[in-house]
Length: 260
Image (cartoon, rainbow, N blue to C red; front, side, top):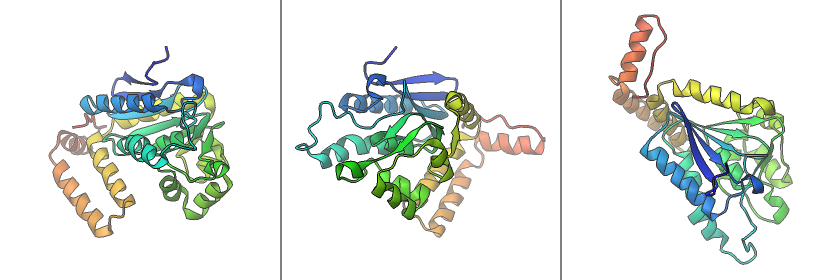
């Protein structure tokens, strides 16, 4: 059943799924849906999972912003982005557990930003991915510039920006925009299998690695990164997962991590 809030949270063992659930409008975001997304993130802060999947219900991941009740020629675009969409993207990007976007169909605008805010992106072959703001005389939002530059480099980023071209799953994987492309019918199975494998790992250590990678993207130097690694190693040494990992290595068996 479709969630009237537009977003729902599902759990299966240690895996949680944030489901974008306005299929009638290709999961386009309105203000209520943004609020529901924050509420789901609040739930995950209160009761964490060990890996989170973000996916769309119906025919698309997300077609972006719902403009049906908007007035784009007269509204305050800066305020809408700074106060509504950017905080949502930022919260997802720094969520303290591994995240995977399962992309199919349209993945546009703020939907593209949501997908790119995830740590990993797996997409279906027939996905249509991008932010064609060139068609309306404006610039990408929701972190689109940063995502493109970090993932595919400045030259390819500018090509996609200038042309407004949407790309399918095969091309997205080939240029490094996403981690992998799979047949449409296999998408959820592939993503859930990957999420469950990650959730079975040392997720406390993964959270520190995620923070280190984010710091490097934000401009941390090599010396700063190495110092942060040393601090993390020192803090993780002696934790249950570290003890289990070292014990399993010495006993030549597979470790059984708990995320602690």
